Image 1 (cartoon, helix red, strand yellow):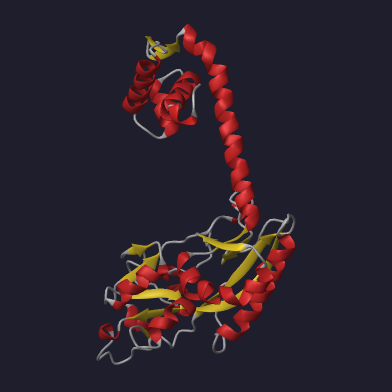
Image 2: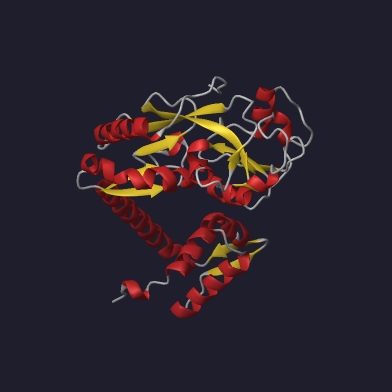
Length: 313
């Protein structure tokens, strides 16, 4: 009797892909490996079974009679495995409440406040994942997303979490002795650090937005190091690599002890809304609405100061 331990899954998967594609090269592209790896896995399978499975035919391959006879069962077997995996994911999702947020915000604001929404989550375990696009939430099993992105599909609910100031900041050493560190001119010759948009945050302000609001057009606005994570960019700014344009909420832990200083204060800061988004229908829609409402209530306590006038809608 063949046991699960005896099943050469990688070889069977390679055979199935090669049969569908009719080519080792196309099978390799499908599985994300090299054609040599596909050929090696099929040869190992042939040696293990003691039967020839494929033969060369022109630029492609053809299945032997033995492989053709077995292929429908192998195909159904992989379909059954895939179905089982989907069921396991569904069962796991039923026991968890998944929140998607960018890593900087998740580590600095969300994670320390999860205990405040513990009661609303009931017996569900919290799972925090990196940001996903709104239209992929249900596919990825995300129950609540925290995003800057404008708008949402009709089947998604939206709730503003808070509005953040987006400010320029740098290490104190870069402005030491500068006559007017609060003027826009302080940035004219300072290297600029950039944050690449994530989680569909196509509305996050860039340096180009900031200089436009300041009424200035310096050269090389788009030049300089780029970072996928705001917390990593903040460390580069602390090291004196240049000025960073980022959320005051994320930068606050570096501003308060003086590792970074806000500069160009004479230019009204940009602002941006962070929003809570969740599917309106589904088994956890009502719980998501409750968790979102509680996070929004916590946010009222967590934001300091008045908002400036200039804002990106």
